[in-house]
Image 1 (cartoon, rainbow, N blue to C red):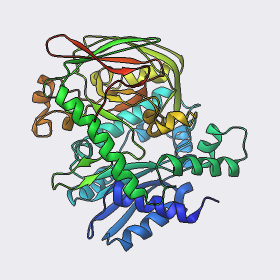
Image 2 (cartoon, helix red, strand yellow):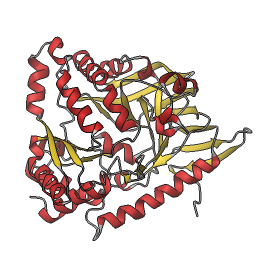
Image 3 (cartoon, helix red, strand yellow):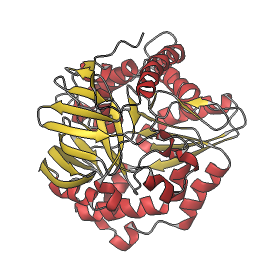
Length: 412
């Protein structure tokens, strides 16, 4: 059994640094019933910190599988209005949102990928208004993960369920800095480091970034007025929060109409309970015009068919290959972890906060500035130890940003 004291420190970190819970604020937690013990610890800590209400949205992998296996498409694509209203009610009240993700990566591998894609699209459409709150940083939100049996044994297949869970707890505690004496202080220092990187890139304001490595040769033009973010984010009232724990990235958006070249994924992508691996995408004028996949071709195809915006990019993130997650040598089959081991990009919706004044623009204005819109936002990893990145200045000069997977910049 994982160290109870470290679990309590993790819960406290998620509340203080993750969502930065305030006294008198409501907290909404998305969690699986397999993680009930840890979720109760979080709820207890939240009430001790003065939360006025802690609401749990429970999920269960076995029940999710049964529903996808037996229910009709009509049922799977019908999102009840009360579910949407519940989320909007909490958002309008300024609640904090903490998602504790720990789903089995292979949960829906035997389910028709078209069925899964339709359900995901219906959910995206129904929750579009609610997502405006999170993607524009209007409420504090954070994503963390805890071990569950199926996920842990996917990472450590040669271990028993109990030993695999214990090993994964140890890795998580280390990666999110919970094993340090004061995790909150450690995250404050980490956020300062990421702030240096994003401030440097914002000052340079490159016109484009060019990525080259084995299987990848691509140019991402960046919108005028783009903003690099990373580490902590800021609410309209000035309070900080950390959307992802762990996080090792600084990120912005590519111009939705100005991406050209080929990119090859360097880690598997788990999407909709299915694995996509050994895949590459070719872009022309910002749009995917060709793609390949050794595993999960149909799943990738359905992802790209979600809507027009799913064939374009909404995020570009830089992560040095020497990040703690990369150095663990593990593939986590969990985007929250794997994306922070590697430079990555995301198909789908862009964060309006990555553009000057973007949060105040309507859809037409955002499109005019090259900001992508979609019902989906799916990150996949493209970084490696041989990745070189050049920054292209407004006058066409090229400067090294990454060499051999590491920063080629002195931030001091």
